[in-house]
Image 1 (cartoon, rainbow, N blue to C red):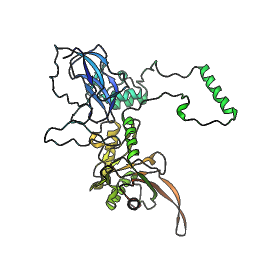
Image 2: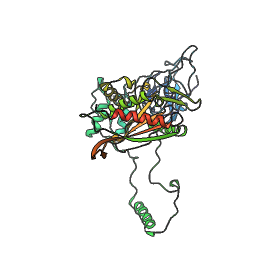
Image 3: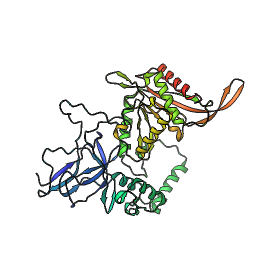
Image 4: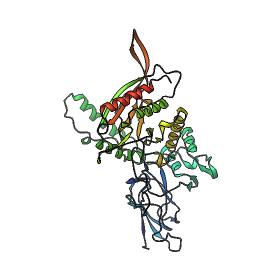
Length: 436
């Protein structure tokens, strides 16, 4: 065994090229035991605790909290202690580097574990998060990550979990009532000094008041007041997946409005949307499908596994409501509530974040009537629901005001014709417009 042993960031089970350091549990010069908690890392799905691969002294750490580390890059360097337990040479650590590992002879390959907004590979390793005591505070890695994000000092949080463990709810409660605000960092960005602010204002005023036409320049050629911020975790993966989708798909969008005037009583709009999408998929199976642009093959699915976009501060998640076509209204609502809760506390399994056959973006909960949502391959289509509104509608003998729900359907025109998409949209509208 060499005097110093580098530890390379392993594949954390999601096939991503990098991960973000959330919190070190040690500092350089500390002693650590084999498999003791070393660091928590944020991936596109969760905050994962990484254990130490050796017993010994921490010689060097590969970055500070917030740094993005490439899979396979040096995460830490150790000086192993031969007097303490070490992992036997060749013993499996449960982690894998880089690309897909070869499956044992006769074993089936791993299933696609899914992503936040696409597909990725998962290693065979199974990891569990444990509450770790750091600085006298016991908390799960995900709880520490949330506390850091919300500016909460964990040492001042009233812990309600077993054995004095701080929970997500404890951190959220402390953030809401302000009882455990972290001290302001001395390195926090301060406003520009007054003289510099005055010079900047004078420069802009002179340009504005001159009235002279000016040649437009690319934005990158001018000075910016903000600081570049590296994308991390969910947003980093989202950027990659969206770029790949833009490069691979030939998108076309159809829009129309569902007239809800015949609805009886108060109804759950999201549940009705899910039911209508399932009905449309039965009527026109061509859009409940996957398309392989390289092999030019289409796979039609007998079931509807609906990906439902969930917007969070960390980025976009798309959990999957399995067998949506087989669920009644209560089952649909219960499934949606469960998936959303798991997304928000970052406890959702990787298996619930991939393999959807169709997807739904209910962006109208916030604003907007129509959109061109991104189709993420291999899916063929995505449905977008806009903001519910009241429109003046012409009827026989006059006009009326009806509630109407704008619907956008974006589909990959390589895999489906305009006629198929239009018939799918018509079937969806027909189901939505039923009284109940």
